Length: 172
Image 1 (tube, rainbow, N blue to C red):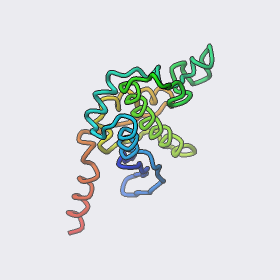
Image 2 (cartoon, one colour):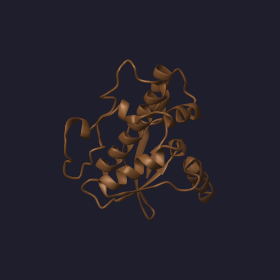
Image 3 (cartoon, one colour):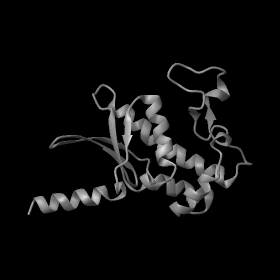
């Protein structure tokens, strides 16, 4: 389970066994904070709208920018450096998609790295960041690269609240 809140926590769930694996300080709070500084808004809907009009190749340095042929298991359009191509002429739309990519890719990569040396290949994504229209395409691309599955359940933005309510009901 990858809980994308203000930060992100990783929880391994096997049947009734729940184990907190760890977490990172990157999440919705990062997206909003960087957007406040760079885009002058923290409105997630506005950030997503701006990002939909942006071009990630204007912001991120990709493998194809530094290497003329694919590396093993790394496609040419994979990110080599978030914001590695950004300059003073970047549009707010490009900056918005850059922030979105950086946050979601960091979460996906951290989840994948946290699962190494285990049998985990399925990751359930929950939290408000799942509602970004860019979320599914970004995680789909990481599925191809890492050969894992990122699953976004229905009502993923409410999963923590639903889990708390079910636990409360079960404990009564």
